[in-house]
Length: 258
Ligand code: SF4
Ligand code: SF4
Image (cartoon, rainbow, N blue to C red; front, side, top):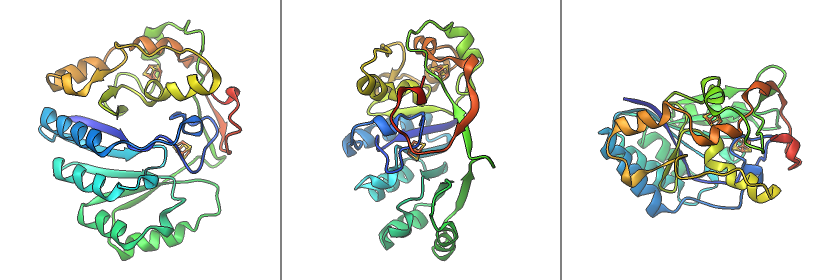
């Protein structure tokens, strides 16, 4: 059984946190196409026989997707027994309509909200989840509102084996990211294209850094892929990772990511 698979459905975000490891503050406005999403979910469900412990639906901010309800229903259709978590920053939750809350309840979706130091009425959100009988959890930042800083080495001169061996995202099945037909072992490699474009850099993602979902033969191929370094690991400066990225809105400065 695979532990967690994450499906990106929206690339941009309505919050834009400093140093976001999905690079959403730098991303173009972009939504997963329904055709691609359905094909990826179906292919992964066929490969795993639906045996994935947890599916994450995220972004960017997934609540921005105009066809979110359809996405959640499709996911539940293919993964009858998995825990499905919708991971949101909560900004839009209090303005969601009844159909959204009914979809969460009827499709047994767990709502997971990151609690940022913002003026959001988290109590009201919690109240709504009780009212509609939705499984719910908050993901709190640390007391100091700090998060991990994951610096990129734009020269790509890190030892990829060292980076991988010392990375909390490496060698596990909890960070598998699927975006538009490609499976990556982590969100950094999956989304670096936005960093490259915005800062005019060239951190290379080549065809050894991902699997094409349609071509994967069996679960063993996924396990094998995530259990050894990706060439892209040479861009991760794992030695200088620190837990001092105090939460703030991104100024879109390169220092937030290098
Ligand atoms: S809310 Fe999440 S996805 Fe959006 S910018 Fe912040 S960390 Fe990134
Ligand atoms: S590219 Fe490699 S080292 Fe960097 S976060 Fe992903 S798995 Fe970890």
